[in-house]
Every structure is written in structure tokens, then in C-alpha cells.
Image (cartoon, rainbow, N blue to C red; front, side, top):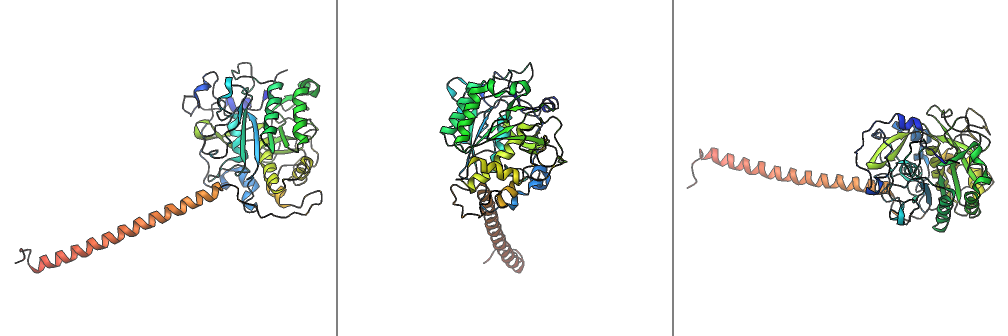
Length: 403
């Protein structure tokens, strides 16, 4: 049985090396950093098709996932990336590195950083995560990206189960799993330890989100086929199925997964594709809902996300789109599908809003600039007045010394 992580071969094959040769962390010498083309984020949301589609500015004020923790079980998370500064908890776990020294806050492949940035990435012009106020609990558990020559350290069901239990014990509200077993390998009986850990998370009303996988002919995917798990397929910019997205009866919802802008090691941004990057968009939506409705049962989050999904070409219950394409704004703003009246609570500010911090800093910079301009203008006025007086007296005396 081989675990297939969700970075696609097309991403690797089309990559152009534009990043520094040095690894993001000294402990990454054992593995090749997945190279990617560096992309500069657009100046506003209109230049990012994912953000343009969702219109996240229509979310209620202060609804950004604050108070919510999302566990990212992946290749680690580069915590000092500009998109993730202040968003990554320092009590993560590393199940791959001896001694766990990184606490999950380093990433040798880029995959986990990209996933985390889509969930909780800080707002920067044409980039932001779905829930930029959420906190990421990084758990480094898998470095494989597929292929016989893959030099990443492989995971196993025991490590993944331990990672899920760690997330439960450390207060995760949402768990994102951007890897999958497909087809014959998707039989839950082959992954009892893994499946039992998922059951424990679901029983705690933790929202578990799983990528469907990147094989277009696959019709069964574990852990998406587990009860209480949201299985996520991928779409392209035009709203149709991403070419290699797995399908089947366990697709609950779909999300953007083609040409998706994410944060990447070395502090850059790049475009990626795959169901790996559709799943965190749904996880971010769950974080928004968790902030608003902390006492909801896990099934209520699934119902709300699927009931408010945008229509897709496949119609409802499609094997490629599920209930449709996730819509974070509708999920938050629409009346809950199970009858509870929606109300926008008076959300307490638990921590500084990164967008508010940026706005305040811009305001301070403008005030400082205006002050310096005023001082400079005053000084120039004094110089002109003095110069005029000297010139007048000099001309009057024909530049002779005063007697």
C-alpha cells in the first residue's frame, strides 16, 4: 500500500527553478525542495481568481476564523513565511525528524506551507487565506509527493493516527488531510488505526477535511470515504472539474484546485494545482463557521457547507463536484440549513487583526510622512525668508560690510 500525497506531477514537471538553491532549513539536506515558479501576488483580489470568485470582503466584520485552530497534517509549515507570520502555533509536532526539534514549523517540500497559507494566510493585496484570523497547528507527518524517485520521508498509518490524536489533545477545531489512499488501497479495513483516529476526532465534533486525490480514474478515496469526513474534489478557473481530480460517491463538495496561488518556502508565492489545495479552502470555510458557531455538532458544519455550495455543472450529488462548489460567504451568511436562526454575534477580539495592524501601520506611515513634509516646508520657508532679507540688505548696501 502506497500513500500518495497530493502534489501533482504536472506541478513538478512545469516547475522553473527561480528559488535560492539553499534549503529552507538546515535539516532539509535529506530531501529535494519542490521547486516552483515564483509569482508576485496581484495588487488586489481581482487578480486572484480564487478570491475574486468568493468576494471575501462580503463576510461580516471580524469573521476571519479568530479563536479557531486548524491542524495541518502535512510536510510541515514554514512559520516565518510572510503569509504565515503570527498564524502558526509554536507547539506543533514533528513525527519525521528525530527528536521532533522543528515542532512542525519547518517545511522541506513546500506542500504543507501552501496548504496552511490557503487556510490562514495573512492578507496582502491579492492574497489571503480563507480564514486569516485562524491559527495553524503544524504537524509534520508526510514528505512524499509520489513517484519512484521521491526522496521524501514516508509516513504510515501509525504516524498519522498519532498526529490526529495530537491534534485532538491540543485543541484543534478543524483537521486538514491533503493526502489519500486510492482505489484498492482505500479499503478502510486496511487502515484501521488511521480510521479509528478519525473516528475519535469526529466524536469530538472536530471538522475533518480530506482531499479526494489526484487520479482522474479513481472512484474510491480514503479517508474521504469515512463517516463525518468532508471529501473535497477540485475545479479549474472556469468552474469545471480539474482534469486529474478523483471522483466518486464520497465527494461532498468541490473547491478551486487549478492555478491556485499559495505561499511557498523561501518566502515566495507560487501557483499550484491539485485536490491538496482544494481541501484547505474548505477547511478555512469550516474555520469561519467554527468561530461563529462553536457549539455546533460536526454534522452541522457538513450540512451547512454542502447546503450553501454554489451550483456546479454536475448538479447536486455529482460524483465530481459533490453538492457543488464551496462558497465561504454563503456558508457564513445564509440561514443554517437545519433551522437555527442566523445571527452575527458580537465577536470578541481575541488577538490583533492582521488587517487592522496593516491599516494602522499605513496610517502611522502617512502621519509621519505628513509631519516630515510639514517640517521640511517650514524650514524651507524660514530659509527663503532669511535669504530674502540678506539679499535685500546686500543689494541696499551694494554688498559692502555694515558700518
